[in-house]
Amino acid sequence: MLFEPFPFSGYHLKNRLVRSATYEKRADDDGFVTAELVEFYEGLAKGGVGLIISGNVLVHTSGRSVPQQMCIHNDFYIDKLRRLADAVHDLGGKIVIQLVHGGRQSFPALLGGKQPFAPSVVHDPSTKITPRSMDDREIWEIIEAFGDAARRSMYAGFDGVQLHGAHGYLISEFLSPHTNRRDDYWGGDEERRFHFVEEVYRTMRGEVDRNYPILIKMNADDFIEGGLSPEESSRIAKRLEDAGVCAFEISGGMYESGGKTIRPNIDSPGQEAYFRPLAGLFKERLKVPVMLVGGMRSREVMEDILRKGDADLISMSRPLIREPDLPVKMRDGKEKADCISCNGCMRFNKLDVVRCTELKQ
Ligand SMILES: Cc1cc2nc3c(=O)[nH]c(=O)nc-3n(C[C@H](O)[C@H](O)[C@H](O)COP(=O)(O)O)c2cc1C
Image 1 (tube, rainbow, N blue to C red):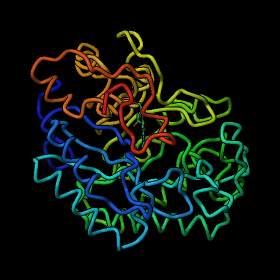
Image 2 (image 1 turned 60 degrees about the vertical axis):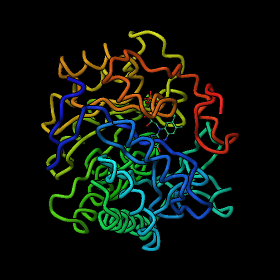
Image 3 (image 1 turned 90 degrees about the horizontal axis):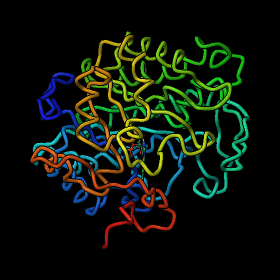
């Protein structure tokens, strides 16, 4: 099934493999697409993956969590982003752009010394950052920024946008009862915690064509006491589906939950697909495609997931850092990714670009 074409939001993916959003550290200091970045995405497109989701792209300068990250907070970024989308299309690929605001997981060193903001003042012991709480004006400003970013993404020629609603960044912070302690329109109960992503979606939809694909990556579970649970998250997903979100990527964890998102040392089928048990609730509640990410390494496990209907699409990050041509190799008979999940690629503060540290350069 892995290499059967898949109908997706008005077009066909050539297979069921997705490159999950992966920060590349290849933009220039101002966040513009570079020639190196275009070449990098050409490598992924040639490698045969059915759908590429870009690394996270910043919608507003107040949400910067990594250096040399692609940006889209201004119309000036459109031209070079278009070059990237065109390069993928010229090679027969499809590419969706991931949009993000870092929230409390942004760093003062990348914000000109400013304190990051978030829904509520909740200290993050993993980064030792205590954010300040956003006021109403700031919340609407960020919602508008997501809307503007969606419009720019469509003009730049991307095949859709994916909201980064997972991993403890701003959207995930509004959804999570752990990081959202507000008692106003934006927080309190499940309904009010939903309002931020609802307004973001509504604003984006108003800026793009009626059928332009809007996807979301969500935490099924924050893996934190008092955080978002699979039951609640899948209910929220249903509401987003009713609003018009066309695909969901299921992930989990935030910085504070410590190592749940990008798990190391996956070396047996039993350790693979570590969010698979959580995807069932989403598959039960949703009609639109569900992508599963996290630890998929072998064809055996991927095919089993598809056959049993636990997900519709198989999404991978680290294996494609090591082998951008893994899909082509698997199509030709390769059984398992070479990635050993050592997480060397995650030490990007020390790396010039995000790359596999196991491979000789
Ligand atoms: C170097 C690196 C950068 C990542 N950047 C992003 C990102 O920009 N957006 C995102 O949603 N997830 C990001 N992730 C998480 C992956 O998309 C994925 O959810 C996670 O690595 C688990 O999948 P895997 O086992 O296939 O690597 C990143 C992961 C790695 C290793």
